[in-house]
Length: 398
Image (cartoon, rainbow, N blue to C red):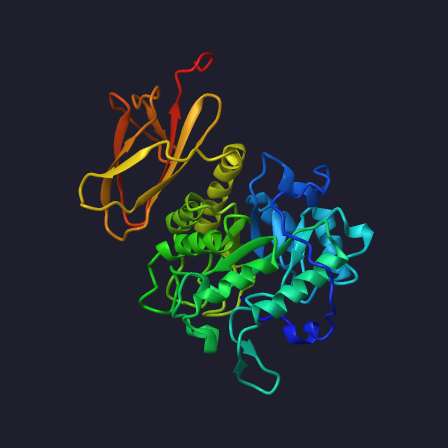
C-alpha cells in the first residue's frame, strides 16, 4: 500500500475519550442512501483500494460498489465526484468529511494504513510499528467524533506471514495482532502471493486464506474480515495475475470467512499506473465476472453458514487440504469449496440426509456432476475453488 501521512502527527492531537465497543451490524445508516450499502442483504461488499474518484463510474461498471481510502483526502473534489457517481467510500476522517452534506456517501472511516509495519521516520529510516495501545486511542477519538459509522483498519502481510521483515523490530511477533484487532469495527489485510518478491511466498495462494483465518481467530469471530486481493502486477514487472488466480484468491478468502473483498489495482513496475486494471482487459473482464457472481450470490453469502453439514474425504491422498463453506436457500444447498494445496487432489463430499447428489451444478464452469446417493467426487487443481449448487427435493422446488 502507499504510505499515509505520518500517524504520529495525528496521535499528538489525541485526548482521552470513552470507549465505544465495536459492532457487526451497521443499522444506523439508512439503506436508501449509498452509504448504507452494508446493510442491504442483496449486496456483497466489493471495493477498490485508493483510486481517483474520477473513475468511479468505470468501476461501477465492473461491479465495484465502494471505495476504500482516498489519496491525500478526502477533498471537496473527491467527495463531490463520489456523490455524483453514487459511490460510497470508506474515507480518512477529517472535518470536511464529517459535514452532514456528505452523510449519504461516507459509508465508514479508514484508519491509517498498515500501522503494524515499521514506520518511516521524518529524518530517514524506519522506527517500530505503531503500538496497539496508541492505535486504540486513535480509534476511540474517531469513534467519539462519529459513533454511527464503522471504522476499517487495514493491516499488512504480517497477518499471514510471521517472518515479514517489514515489521522491523516486531518481526515474528504475531501476538501483537491480538491488540491491533481491538482498534477497528472491520478488519482487512493485504498479502500478494501471486506477484510476491519472496520466492517462498510467491505462488502460495493459501497465505491469503491463512490471514483471514488468523484475523477471525484474533478477533474472536466478532468483527467482519475483508480480504485485499492483488489485481495488478503490483511491483513485479514480470507477473500479471490471471483471472483464474484472482478468482481463486477471492473464493478462498470467502470460504475461510471473508465477508468483503477489496481489489488492489496499482502498478508500480515497470512504470506507475494507478488504475492499471483498465489497461489489462482480460483480467478486467475476468474480475467483472467474479463480481457478478458475488452479487448473484450475495443473499446466500450473507445468510447463516451451516456448520458440520457435509463431510470431505480425500480420495487420492492420505490428507485433506480442501475446505468448504456451506450455505442454503429455500431450494438449494450451496457448497463453496477450495484447496489450500499446490498439488492436485480428488475428494469426496458427503451431503446431509435427504439431499441427493444426482445433479450437482458447478457454477461458472459449464459442467455438472451426476452421481447416485448422497455423495459426489471432484478434482481440485492447485489452489482451485469450485462452487456447487445442489437442488433440494423440498415441496415447491421444481
